[in-house]
Image (cartoon, rainbow, N blue to C red):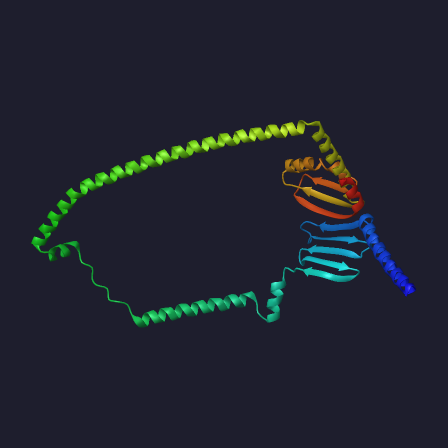
Length: 311
């Protein structure tokens, strides 16, 4: 019985060590096996269609992500694990047209059918209106005829009522004018109050901004903070140098109708060109408008180095 217990413990120990060794292997692979990438593309300008493709792989292609963009086919993505396709996406710009062709119908047929239905509905509405008929329109009378139809007594009474109404409407009109003047005065006072409040809030914001600027200035003037900033800049340069492509070459030919614009773009590109002049060639053209390019870059990023820089 004791021998059986020792044998079971021995098997459990071997399994535990195997699992531990597997986890350690995965951790070491994640730290020291680099993630490789490749970017390839071409933009021939007006001569042909532009395309580009990229690939990210890890552990000699055990995990790979591929992408391709073509002007006529759209964007296509594919993820593979150990050679098996895990996820795939394919966008084609003419997918709707292909569906219409498969159904035997075209967009023009659909538009014609919709227009025919609308025309038929309009004709039915016109026919139904014609069946019901319209009411007869009475002849319009002139002001002289309407006045002649009113008796003389009624007209005199109407004139007296109108004069009394005008006399009663005069105080009401004066009251409305006073109300309008009062409302205008209140609006002016309200606008002045809002303006004063806006000026006070603007001055308060200026004061807060000045205080924040003073605090930021003190933070940057601190020697410890300056040392931290220099450290971040130094580590950022190392990280960029580690992640930049190590193989491949690219070429970009550009030009504008105005030579001055071409010179400005070239001056702006000269700020970063010293860091990539070995892999990238810039060809300016000053006499015509052009934009062409082709590239094929390869590089790798190792997780252990990134973690070391962060530490």
